[in-house]
Length: 158
Image 1 (cartoon, rainbow, N blue to C red):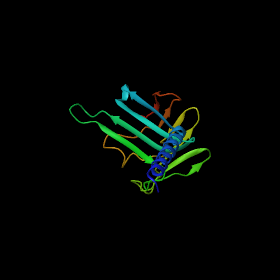
Image 2: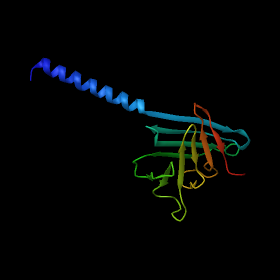
Image 3: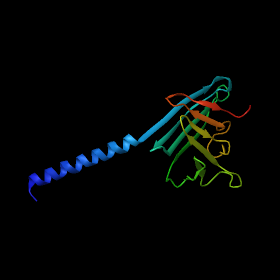
Image 4: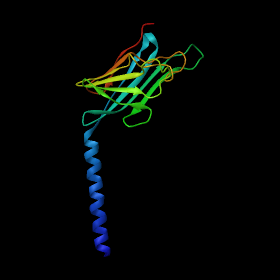
Protein backbone atom coordinates (compact mmCIF):
# COMPACT_ATOMS: atom_id res chain seq x y z
CA UNK A 1 0.00 0.00 0.00
CA UNK A 2 1.32 3.44 -0.86
CA UNK A 3 1.83 6.14 1.73
CA UNK A 4 -0.81 8.42 0.12
CA UNK A 5 -3.34 5.59 0.08
CA UNK A 6 -2.65 4.81 3.76
CA UNK A 7 -3.23 8.43 4.76
CA UNK A 8 -6.45 8.60 2.70
CA UNK A 9 -7.70 5.37 4.30
CA UNK A 10 -6.85 6.72 7.78
CA UNK A 11 -8.70 10.00 7.10
CA UNK A 12 -11.70 8.09 5.78
CA UNK A 13 -11.82 5.83 8.86
CA UNK A 14 -11.40 8.83 11.17
CA UNK A 15 -14.26 10.67 9.45
CA UNK A 16 -16.49 7.59 9.76
CA UNK A 17 -15.69 7.29 13.48
CA UNK A 18 -16.50 10.96 14.10
CA UNK A 19 -19.76 10.70 12.15
CA UNK A 20 -20.77 7.60 14.12
CA UNK A 21 -19.99 9.21 17.49
CA UNK A 22 -21.97 12.34 16.54
CA UNK A 23 -24.92 10.21 15.46
CA UNK A 24 -24.81 8.39 18.80
CA UNK A 25 -24.54 11.63 20.77
CA UNK A 26 -27.43 13.11 18.80
CA UNK A 27 -29.67 10.21 19.87
CA UNK A 28 -28.67 10.51 23.54
CA UNK A 29 -30.51 12.79 25.95
CA UNK A 30 -29.86 13.35 29.65
CA UNK A 31 -32.76 14.60 31.76
CA UNK A 32 -31.66 15.86 35.13
CA UNK A 33 -32.77 17.92 38.08
CA UNK A 34 -31.95 18.71 41.69
CA UNK A 35 -34.05 19.08 44.81
CA UNK A 36 -33.99 20.56 48.29
CA UNK A 37 -36.58 20.00 51.00
CA UNK A 38 -35.52 22.38 53.76
CA UNK A 39 -38.23 21.31 56.20
CA UNK A 40 -36.86 17.74 56.11
CA UNK A 41 -33.21 18.77 55.64
CA UNK A 42 -32.90 16.67 52.51
CA UNK A 43 -31.40 17.45 49.12
CA UNK A 44 -30.14 15.62 46.08
CA UNK A 45 -30.31 15.16 42.35
CA UNK A 46 -31.46 12.74 39.70
CA UNK A 47 -30.42 12.06 36.11
CA UNK A 48 -31.85 9.68 33.53
CA UNK A 49 -30.05 9.01 30.24
CA UNK A 50 -32.21 8.18 27.24
CA UNK A 51 -31.07 6.80 23.90
CA UNK A 52 -33.73 6.96 21.20
CA UNK A 53 -36.28 7.52 23.99
CA UNK A 54 -35.23 4.38 25.88
CA UNK A 55 -33.83 4.58 29.44
CA UNK A 56 -30.21 3.42 29.51
CA UNK A 57 -28.88 4.86 32.79
CA UNK A 58 -30.19 6.27 36.06
CA UNK A 59 -28.39 8.14 38.82
CA UNK A 60 -30.06 9.33 42.02
CA UNK A 61 -28.40 10.90 45.03
CA UNK A 62 -30.23 11.89 48.23
CA UNK A 63 -28.46 13.58 51.14
CA UNK A 64 -29.95 13.92 54.60
CA UNK A 65 -28.59 16.17 57.35
CA UNK A 66 -27.09 14.50 60.37
CA UNK A 67 -27.44 15.67 63.93
CA UNK A 68 -25.42 18.78 64.78
CA UNK A 69 -21.75 17.86 64.79
CA UNK A 70 -22.38 14.62 62.88
CA UNK A 71 -21.88 13.82 59.19
CA UNK A 72 -24.65 13.79 56.61
CA UNK A 73 -26.26 10.57 55.44
CA UNK A 74 -26.71 9.66 51.81
CA UNK A 75 -28.41 7.27 49.42
CA UNK A 76 -27.24 6.52 45.91
CA UNK A 77 -28.56 4.69 42.90
CA UNK A 78 -26.34 4.25 39.84
CA UNK A 79 -27.52 1.67 37.34
CA UNK A 80 -26.93 1.18 33.62
CA UNK A 81 -28.74 -1.05 31.16
CA UNK A 82 -26.59 -4.15 30.69
CA UNK A 83 -24.74 -3.99 34.03
CA UNK A 84 -24.59 -7.13 36.16
CA UNK A 85 -26.21 -5.51 39.21
CA UNK A 86 -29.65 -4.90 37.68
CA UNK A 87 -32.27 -6.29 35.31
CA UNK A 88 -34.23 -3.97 32.98
CA UNK A 89 -37.59 -5.42 31.88
CA UNK A 90 -40.14 -3.22 30.09
CA UNK A 91 -43.71 -3.33 31.33
CA UNK A 92 -46.74 -1.33 30.21
CA UNK A 93 -44.72 1.53 28.72
CA UNK A 94 -42.41 1.79 31.75
CA UNK A 95 -38.85 0.65 32.34
CA UNK A 96 -38.45 -1.44 35.48
CA UNK A 97 -35.05 -1.70 37.10
CA UNK A 98 -34.75 -4.68 39.44
CA UNK A 99 -31.78 -4.94 41.78
CA UNK A 100 -30.18 -8.33 40.99
CA UNK A 101 -28.98 -8.78 44.59
CA UNK A 102 -31.28 -6.88 46.97
CA UNK A 103 -30.40 -6.36 50.62
CA UNK A 104 -33.56 -8.26 51.59
CA UNK A 105 -34.17 -11.01 49.04
CA UNK A 106 -37.69 -11.58 50.43
CA UNK A 107 -38.84 -8.08 49.37
CA UNK A 108 -38.93 -6.41 45.94
CA UNK A 109 -36.19 -3.90 45.15
CA UNK A 110 -37.38 -2.15 42.03
CA UNK A 111 -37.51 1.26 40.36
CA UNK A 112 -40.16 2.14 37.79
CA UNK A 113 -39.31 4.82 35.24
CA UNK A 114 -41.91 6.33 32.95
CA UNK A 115 -40.81 8.71 30.18
CA UNK A 116 -43.02 11.34 28.57
CA UNK A 117 -42.95 15.10 28.80
CA UNK A 118 -41.61 14.49 32.31
CA UNK A 119 -39.56 11.56 33.61
CA UNK A 120 -41.14 9.86 36.60
CA UNK A 121 -38.98 7.73 38.91
CA UNK A 122 -41.16 5.64 41.22
CA UNK A 123 -39.12 4.23 44.12
CA UNK A 124 -42.06 2.95 46.18
CA UNK A 125 -40.73 -0.63 45.87
CA UNK A 126 -37.03 0.24 46.18
CA UNK A 127 -35.14 -0.85 49.28
CA UNK A 128 -33.20 1.86 51.09
CA UNK A 129 -31.13 -0.73 52.97
CA UNK A 130 -27.97 -1.45 51.02
CA UNK A 131 -28.16 1.91 49.19
CA UNK A 132 -28.36 4.34 52.11
CA UNK A 133 -26.35 5.08 55.19
CA UNK A 134 -27.98 4.93 58.61
CA UNK A 135 -30.50 7.74 59.01
CA UNK A 136 -31.17 8.14 55.28
CA UNK A 137 -33.79 6.75 52.96
CA UNK A 138 -34.64 6.94 49.29
CA UNK A 139 -37.39 9.33 48.21
CA UNK A 140 -40.70 7.65 47.34
CA UNK A 141 -40.74 9.33 43.92
CA UNK A 142 -38.97 11.97 41.82
CA UNK A 143 -40.32 13.72 38.74
CA UNK A 144 -37.76 15.31 36.42
CA UNK A 145 -39.16 18.31 34.51
CA UNK A 146 -38.94 18.68 30.73
CA UNK A 147 -36.16 21.26 31.11
CA UNK A 148 -33.32 21.19 33.63
CA UNK A 149 -34.43 22.60 36.95
CA UNK A 150 -35.90 21.55 40.28
CA UNK A 151 -37.26 18.05 40.72
CA UNK A 152 -40.61 17.37 42.26
CA UNK A 153 -39.85 14.96 45.06
CA UNK A 154 -41.97 12.92 47.46
CA UNK A 155 -40.38 11.79 50.71
CA UNK A 156 -41.77 9.28 53.18
CA UNK A 157 -43.80 10.69 56.04
CA UNK A 158 -41.67 11.69 59.05
